[in-house]
Length: 119
Image (cartoon, rainbow, N blue to C red; front, side, top):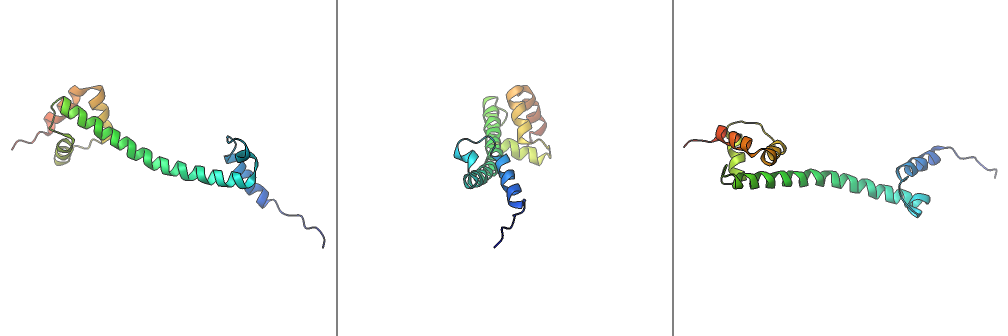
């Protein structure tokens, strides 16, 4: 049998994987099988942690708002503040509320005065 020269497709695929692994060390940088395993694992971790980061920041914002509402006696707790925000249809997300609560609590007090519901 004569030798058949292979195409460039497999080489191009491996080079692409190698470009993703350019900052790895040792065998994770040099061996093709290790490169593919580690790059796949890195992609899984990055996707998982992007989702987890959103979750963690939301928890942080909620705890900051809750702490500020209790310290400054704006409402009894976080849930009543958010409930009244929705009732008055004030569209402030938790990120903005947390920034206001940390940087300028007087503005949080002003917001709460706008949404206080008189029974």
